Image 1 (spheres, chains in turn green, brown):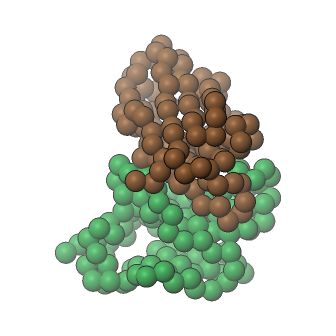
Image 2 (cartoon, rainbow over the protein chains, first blue to last red):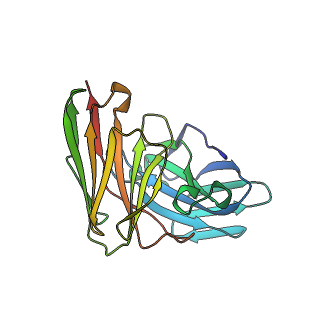
Image 3 (cartoon, rainbow over the protein chains, first blue to last red):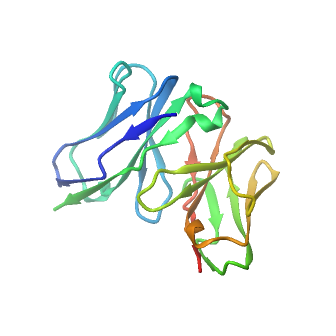
Length: 114
Length: 114
């Protein structure tokens, strides 16, 4: 099995930078995803990391350290529209079956204040 | 708009009712999924279909019955549900079942069982 931990809630100010952490425990790690979900809407893909390091995509960056079982999502120049839940999800080969491998965390609810 | 459409958006049903949730994807994908999202809990994988064949049935009670008539449509038939089944039911699709495949989600059906 696996355990994925991320903070339940975070608050930040418009224009600031926020880092959302995700730690995981798995015996067959095979990739980590971040999704964004606005209230009442579909989760949407943000990033995918399978190798160590930082992946940058505009205002959003995602970092992975496989040896530490750790990832973070970095949001720069925060905007009000970034208020949403951010979901960390891990692929684990040891779970068996291709689709069963993707396991989600409970999500981090980010509130951006003016 | 993610290319995955779910209907209805909201559903209230009694424990003796029979209802169906519908999902349609317009992305030409080969895999479709049902997830359950309860408040403050991680997304739970329920079923996966690949090329219209069920490839995962994640220990879901028989009161939930999926149907995939073709690669673009997925249904979840509901009967004799329990109040604890109240949740957001999300449909998703992906091109295939590869490790780096990202999921495209619908906006979900918010189900309330009375």
